[in-house]
Length: 138
Image (cartoon, rainbow, N blue to C red; front, side, top):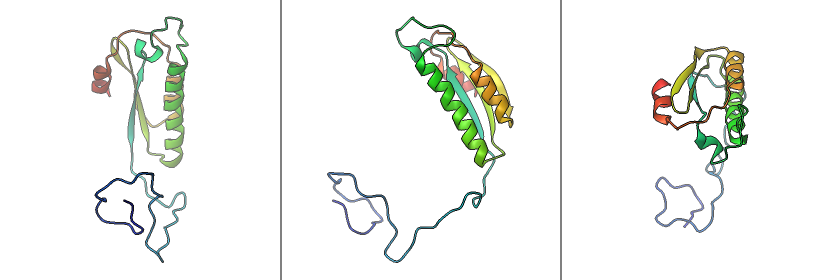
């Protein structure tokens, strides 16, 4: 059951409904962190974009545009690049595509526009799903 005060250990019985967000003890205010106040570390991100039949399901009605799921995949990746680069100028990105084979499309680059452009230009191919190959290439 939930307790009124935070506990060091989890409670023995789970609560029957979601609890409120964690709080600070009475009299202690949560810190306010301003944008730019935190130090960032360089980060490298490899996107593995799935071009296989798993993305578009059993539907064989697609072209190089792919299907909605394929477009969502590309939109997500370019969104991550945009947001991450906005807060960490040292971020670098690489790109691997995979279906029946995994192929490196872009080696690490710190140029967000290059990575986004490369992702946007990917065309759907269909094929088997070689996720392991993509992970090895990343």
